[in-house]
Image (cartoon, rainbow over all chains, first blue to last red; front, top):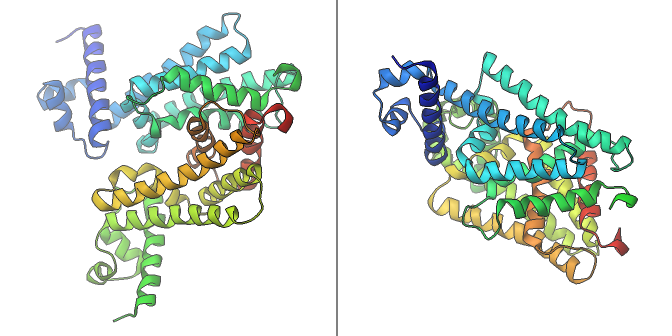
Length: 198
Length: 198
């Protein structure tokens, strides 16, 4: 049997192929048979690596949110200012939407299909990431950079702008992900900055 | 047999019940049997009013977008200024999310499930509504009220903020739909207004 790192690689490959199928055919319309065919495995072999379609959905969620959290954490360790931190978060999200539409769609449209422990774990990570951005905004308010009477609600506006792009972003559109992120960041920053900080 | 207006009423009732079911069980998991049971009709009678689940989805989309378009049109006929127009659009959307979560979820999550003529018609109406808001922003730019180098992209930021609420809005949350709309509108307006117009 394959060793652990080979098995991990194989699982990643299966998840990527499945995400592309979900994006093309829809999560509900994609069967484990379709996934087995797409990765060139017989079904029993597929089940050796992955126990269910829900587990694939979980792995998609996990990879996506881990990526966002670890990117933000690395940046927190640099001397980047809050305005730049927010810009980079928007770029991260737009980049993911552009590069991995299947992941993003599964993450946003099918979160409700996760259950039990898998749902719990993803919920905790989503909450962690959300609070990381609330913290940036709350600290900016405390330092007199940003104006807001409700940093959580302001964070929901922030995520709304960029997350929503998964509904309309087109790979052949005239704007690159970074340009879109910059446009949104500019509106958002002018929208929340105190007069001295505009 | 029922006369036309009774049949229309009956169809509306079916659509409302179905939207609530879609919201609770998911569009894919809801069958015409479930819908028949929820409205207290036998299946042949249900099929007299509604030809398919997709038709219900279409009617949900149509009612939702017609409501938004006609509200905005009525306001255009008043002397409301552009900033107020944008505020009212945000209130409309947050109100719909709060009052009719099943409609909104169907509208955003299951647009892709519409096909053929039904899809075409809804697409045209969605485009019409989108362009109506782009027009408000473009005219504001031309009048020196708003700053933007891309009114369409700015409109996508605008809709992102409020539409995204369908993913997180909770009926028992501490903020009323209007408060949320006002918070977002405030960020957006400060984000796009020229210095003289802040």
